[in-house]
Length: 96
Image 1 (cartoon, helix red, strand yellow):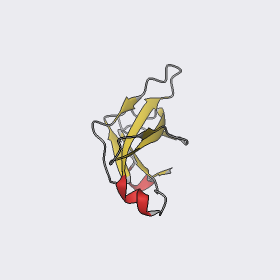
Image 2 (cartoon, rainbow, N blue to C red):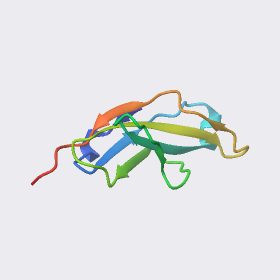
Image 3 (tube, rainbow, N blue to C red):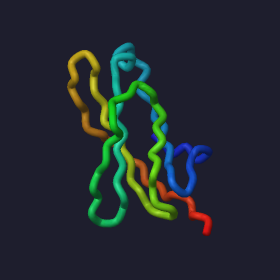
Image 4 (tube, rainbow, N blue to C red):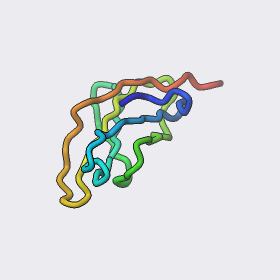
């Protein structure tokens, strides 16, 4: 899992991850989640589960530190696995 810098700016961060290559990975869905690194760490999930392995968080504050993670679930059983990794990143500075 890493930040995709080419798609990152002052109001958005893009996260990319790689599922394992087992046959079961085709039955997985992902729910990206983000929180501001301001001490409160209130998490905000994306609006829906997805099968894509790239997600762009938008509407973020310029030059602000965030922490991102991805929940995984099996789409056949709906069993949810908590994220075992997270990525920290900072949005770019805004223009004035």
